[in-house]
Image 1: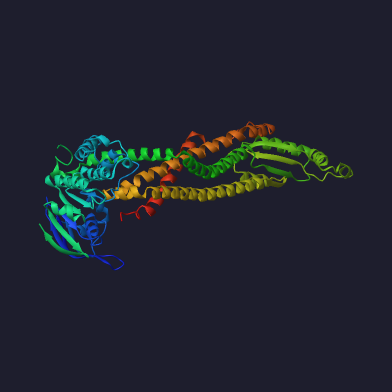
Image 2: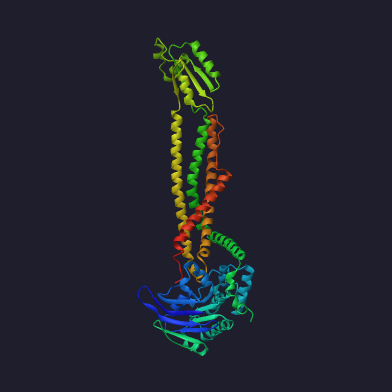
Length: 220
Length: 323
């Protein structure tokens, strides 16, 4: 589903964020991406999202070489990928419902379909009662769950998460990870960048470790 | 566990294959949504929106008001319906009887609207009265003035052709076509029109810049939102749309204010102008821009708003990308 073929990303200031990274993530797989900060986790996710382009090598998503996706194709590419951010990236002047509905509005769904899907997604993350609330009135964990609902509401085939439990306590973190596992159970490819080794090593999934932009090894 | 996440795994790709009709409906829906949302945002900050509207309104009203003034001047000058008058100075030898018969012949012509005879005696008396030289003139042996016939060409008759024909008559010494003042007035009006157009051009450019800057600020204040929308797959057109509508609303409001200002100015000036016209035995009233003109002004404002928004959006939106 996601394939990196000897990918190098060098930033303009000469720093190599990724060096010759090759990896393959299968459909229906849940993979953790770990490494110290600055190891290249975020860069890797950014390449999948087309927020950046590799300096060398190829990135393939769903069999498609991303080099063939022009800047006009980027929005469509992103609509097929759900993303969860550490800092949630919510619209603070819109309520929970509108935040979650955003990808569907962009994709042009009918408002009844939007209502149905948004409520289903909110129900899944346990926030159905808070759909009219503004994000500022929510706790950090709740905001993150709004972000997760938004990332899955469009039923993407790939879900990326960048430090989704970064600011949460262990119990909440485990809850969030459980959500990702549920999505994976129903066929979504999930890639989670996290440095919370204690948490992710307890879950039985493949862990990819980056160090200074290089792939260390992949263990099941 | 029902829910979005549960049911529909495999149809992620089919979501992007929504039919053309659905695309059109979605596109239309987002337009009305953007229009309403932009209008709400404009109305949510009434004070600053009003200032923008006023700035645009004044900038548009100024050239329009000058244009209206010019149009009225044209109407007034057109109502002086003797734009061309030919003065026939008869030969000194022509006596009273010949002058009278020439006058009668001219007055009967189809291409002459009016002919009036000013006899040399009458001319002298008038001159004496106007100049105050009556003592001096009384001492003259001879009346130096010729008979004069004033001829107004009928409408549709070329005054210079008539002038040439009348000048060829034996009894006529000189035929003077009194058009210099009409030409001067016309040149002045021409100059005025050009000035109004130049001013309009500059101010329209100014309006586009004002709007461009207003939209730029709106874009800046919503930078985070733009980033998020782009992250979850919003296209440039999707992001652009609300800002174009914001520009449209500012422009339409500015156009309406401009129409209102012109209307107020006309209302304020109409009474004194009519009074002045009455003193000249005219029932002239100021001509306004009318309903159609007002609507055109509003449309023009809207168009300029869109142009300004487009300018700002194309310059600034591309630079905002998720980092």
